[in-house]
Length: 351
Image (tube, rainbow, N blue to C red; front, side, top):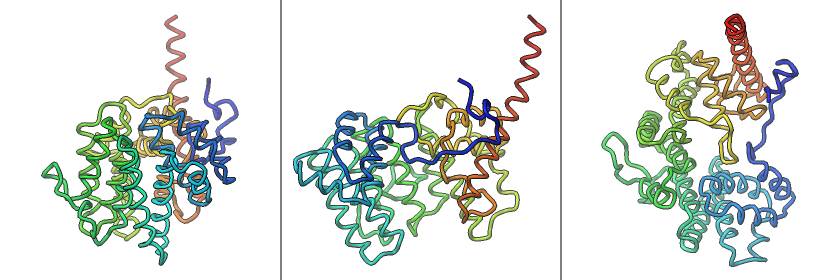
């Protein structure tokens, strides 16, 4: 089926922002959860089973919504032995702790302790599940004083700094395919820790790509790290006027091509909409318009605030990020169609 904007015109395009992304089952459950209902959450996680990639992404989105309700608490009252409810309690506790930390609330330290305890309880009760360990990894970024020894372990590789490597290993033991969120949590730790830097995050992302298989979402990690570097330079006023050209220069181009290699034009329920937005941006910014157009078509109307807010004229205005996404998309689709037309005419002449 042709892309919707190619049927109705590029000017008619309106992006859609929804945390469920490509997961229609999750979208339906979120509507119930926002009303404080938990039965649909229970059934969804039961259907998800041991698909760790999908379970990790679904519980992360569910926790962000459940943190504003008492749905998980009500579920535990009704079914205190439910393993999924225990995991969701840990997920929600981590989400609340992170929100309190970002908001510099006085309750942040207490919520962090409660979240850590909830994750450890879940890890003991469901030892095969990587999600509680992902939660512990998420909490590492708020431990800026490195009070917890597990957040500052010697790395497996000489080029990498100390960090929460033991926690990442625990996730890997349970999800050997390479857990997307766990690796993003390590990136966030490097961003937040006063003893590490964005350069460390870039090294970690590059190291991950060196062993991540073709088509793995882990191949997207360098796109995040390079964008974070760009954003920080822009924020502190040290950005080179030509720094945006990094997307068409080495080594960035190499990692963009590695990310694009093997990506699926038919997104699964577990496919990250944010990943594809980062990939579309990197290809567009590197003037690889035809490949970027393929990613934009796969996204259809799905958009995310980042990375577009980092590169638009006014990052503080949400509508500016929307305009940047729409502008990039229109440019790529138009260029792709313009280049395709002569090729089609040439094939007709051959016939």
